[in-house]
Image (cartoon, rainbow, N blue to C red; front, side, top):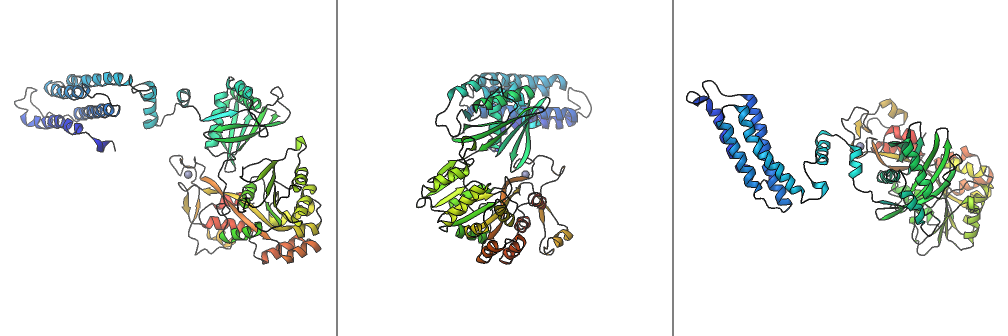
Length: 573
Ligand SMILES: [Zn+2]
């Protein structure tokens, strides 16, 4: 682009160069009469050096002209000086018999003018825009030689658009003293930078783990822990202290587990952090969970559900009563799905109350209550009290004890729609888990509408995924038609790419999508649960009704090139 905007200056600057080159080449012909003596006067080294010097002159002339214009500075006397002195230098170079004596006559004047110009224009611009400064050279080196000078850049780098707030989630007012205390302490900048980086990289958790000399920093991104830049040990301990002060924890206690929370303003939104610390052999470690409640709420379709299943789920959740359970291991995206399901409802004409630990998204027109077992606010206790507030829909963050399970079932039977999650590997196991909690089979059978099993698989990075022919034996084992499936995709292997992919940071994946298994409770299955809860027989009946196992839905994503077979095997073990 820059080249196209030549101001004519470059073009006419070429004229003396052409004349000189012509003179060089014409010299052999005129050699007999020329004062330099006889011989073929054409030296490729001289010509190369001359061309480099000549191009430098043209470039600098062009830079001065354009730079002065951009900065709205006067272009005189700089343009005439740069061009005139250079042209005079060319003439001198041609006249002086010795090339190495002539060259400085050409170079020195215009380079000197350029340096003078640089000093003059540097006076007029902000610090970061100055040229020929150490920072400027470093920037050029980083750009052209891919060199990094992280430490120096940090000290003069921009401030991070993040501010800590000494306020726990359930507190109304900010504790300014806490923030003041941390602002003055060592490691404050490092802590800000680390949290900002984690948010920029879409991390859900930050792990600070001490080793002998370092404080390791690991970020959970798309469900996988990846290493970030570590702190020196002393700095890392200072950073941990900062978070403990922000959470109002006892900073002298470094062994017993403690937990707390604080908030931060990041750009124009607020983010909550849950902090847990505990002593280890190497020292105190910390896990910070990031709750970005302003994150975009997603719909059932965006979760990766097929249209048919989405319609089925929608029909179930809009029923006036019943129970919809999402199951999967920790980090399978269960609560995101529940929020998406809540989002299907008309939040203006129905009374929706949630009991959560913690509140992960903030929803408009919904009453969200956070349980706090330490303060005696349990799921069961909160549920009892909200049932008195005449809700239509209740969302229970998780069912993990008999009492909560029973209240949930009772609510579902008495005209409420109940949403909840269960920690179980698949849908039929989740049913077994409810029975194991000690809930009577007849209560379960009349309460439950459907159970959705799910996992999150990482999506292959569109920028660097690699196409390959799958092994026909593998396809045969998975019951897939080898003639129809041409390619699978996978992340690049080590050494396959010359540089790290900018889009995914070299992990080969970017963001995640869901794979699902929907178990709809039919009348036949209700009967089976009530009479003889034989899970194998119930599963067989569910499959007859069209339930497709989780892995099969995952295979669809592999066939469509969304994820890799290895990723599917990792999550659907
Ligand atoms: Zn990539």
